[in-house]
Image (cartoon, rainbow, N blue to C red):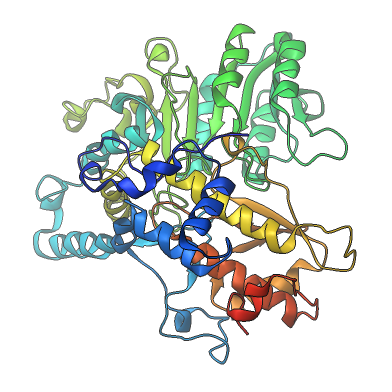
Length: 501
């Protein structure tokens, strides 16, 4: 069993002074052990709301929630106000699709709109964030989140645009080495990008796209199988291109091991970190990853269609060049001389094409400033317990029970090993998931459904609470009953307020 660290934050100046000694006794325990010991300490059942309340009281990161705007129940379009109190905050567990709005996002946007109104073109060079280089000031903050050097990170475009730009330089197929290794069920945009890059180079995806599927009867890929495939096919693989966290199953891949295996076989290794950045601890530089890209509107909370990121390891600064050039890849010192003599910035900065929209820079800045108040190791430690608590409650109420074969049950397809997942759990139901999803929406729960049969639930450590997790499990029981599924258990706490109407 994987042991979890306590909720105490690392030695970060913001959080260290308020480290709660009450949690020290739980160092080294699993989520289950932590919950059960707290319950015993409080003289409550492990599913009691008092356990969630205790965990929230001891959470040194709980103040970060106040940096975000949490929608009210009444503002959700599908909420049924006969079932919920519209004045209460909703249960928002869908940061894996769109993160919450940082409170400072509106302030920063208004500042730039005001500057545009008052100064016009002068805004390019003046003010708190001059438009001509505003995104550059955030790259150090983003580098801290992805485990890179600031000069290895560029903020630009959208994720798929950046993936295309990177593949144009890193995917150089030959007759002998022309394959791209990817997950069989990669995110559609990644699949389309890689397929089109293969066709662009005159190859056939049928022979050059190498999709790796889980073993029969399994939902997720085994690390061993990935590494063996790289070893077996490596001489014909030009690029290994995986996600960091698989969008459907929530599986966290062993990026360090994959990068090392690809490097040994002479392959370039890249990652789509859309579901990993801001979710799990990344060390793109130390792992020797060749390139990566990500969106910023999920766990990094930059708003729908927010400014994306790209990474190119510094080891490629002098021999990997962008295939397409634009004036924003020109050295800033001489960019505005307009002499048409390219002075290409080294590394990933040379991949820039155009100036970045200042109105996308603003919300990203607001979010990254919140990340700076903590650290990814501290967020990860909280996440292990937060997601483990969700897993514990689901298994307690809705685990499959052979003695009650007709009882509705939930199967978690995300790996049970915390080292192989981020904060998302993907839930499969023994009953129709669409009806459950609709009933959850009526009860003020924001999560999402992915075809064919998965409900994705993501308690984000930056702003979600243990009370959110407890409330979700309450609402899930209510939704199952509303669907006529008889979601009752023998747990006496269910009949004393654990599950609402």
